[in-house]
Length: 186
Image (cartoon, rainbow, N blue to C red; front, side):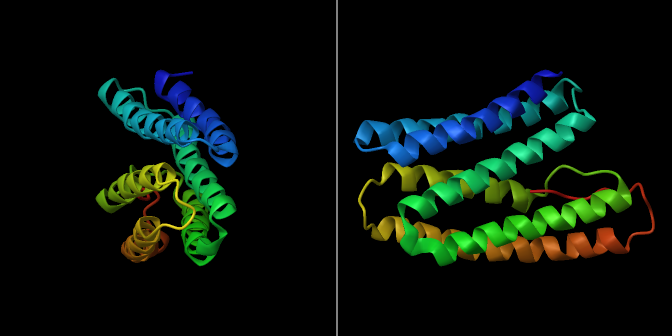
């Protein structure tokens, strides 16, 4: 098991830790701890990719673990936000639908092409925006918050835009007759 794979497993372990801390949070310190767990997840996401590329530690397992950790983190945060702030359910549904569609398309194309490429720039930007919005939302402990509402509406527009940018990538990959042409992820 490589160091990046261990980091990805650590990120997967952070998901239930975040969920427990955030969903049971009552004091500002509890919300701060939940936000810190998200920051640790974000930094370790950057770290595992950098280590894998820099030290040539990419692996087939890593190509599964890293995106799995990404998706589990996204789902975990969206579900926790939905549980704590249920009024935003249409927005969370949009994010979850985007992730499910991306995952399904990736599986179909992975079966056809046998390889997944590193994420596109807009996928990386989406992840950064997701973490920033999530951390700010976790730290904003007010039950009703215009800041949180604005951030999540902005995130929903960004989600639609990112998904739209991935459609031609998926279509091109699906139509490709060349099995060596990989798929972008993110």
